[in-house]
Image: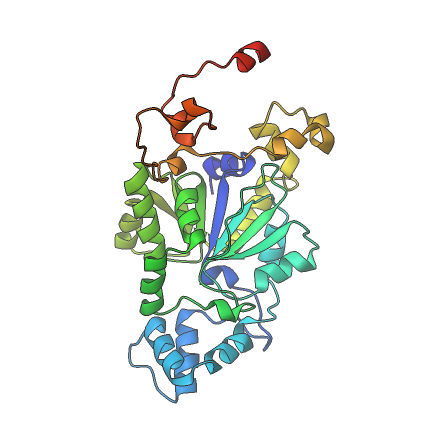
Length: 337
């Protein structure tokens, strides 16, 4: 790892995204390792009474879903539900992350959170309502982009058809992922990022806002030179290793895990440390919603029948009035200052 990642963590600007490899070390209800892509393809092929002949998981899943129907969910529950978390998952929860995205459907990470008694922990699915980032870094949102074994009725994303239909419908949290990718430092753990929905959303966001890709990292044991160069086009840099290496680095880097208050000291110097513990003194800040200018660019400007803005007719100012720096001199504001 490096100082850039350390600084991002201490400034509340580090976001993780788990792929299948991040679940290594977790055990399912059969006391076996959670199956990865190729292993799951073999399991589904056996249920179909077929042998694989070069087909990938997407193709096998489509066939299984068509042939077996709802029984596919029963198979998934057998291998992905009631999972025992790895040591790495348990250790990671000691650090103040505010958002972690996941491409996995198993319940190992949330089980680690519940076992550790993490109170401010929320599981979100791709079409759940977007929640604002906790400005005091005490809440962790765990966003499961491709489905959740505990909410099978919401469906999964495995097949090409599902990727296509979700690209058209634009799941809310995939759109939020694109915004976060252009606002924070990401570490993609245990995935080669062969995710068409992810690239579709970040390129769409980039085209609309003119944003540039921030430097992010992909943590995986190995990639080919061509794969590395392809990821560099999105400013994603390869780090050799796996989740256990990241956790070991955190333990070596910090004598004890930083707290949410440590991040507040770095990001909100206007809040004295004695005030951080006194919620009555910071209630005003908890009611403030941070707004990112690039996000506002995505909003559609209202059509006006008149050149005179509604603001001058007695209505509240809109974000577009603020962005356009519409001049307004208010006596009450002047007197306040």
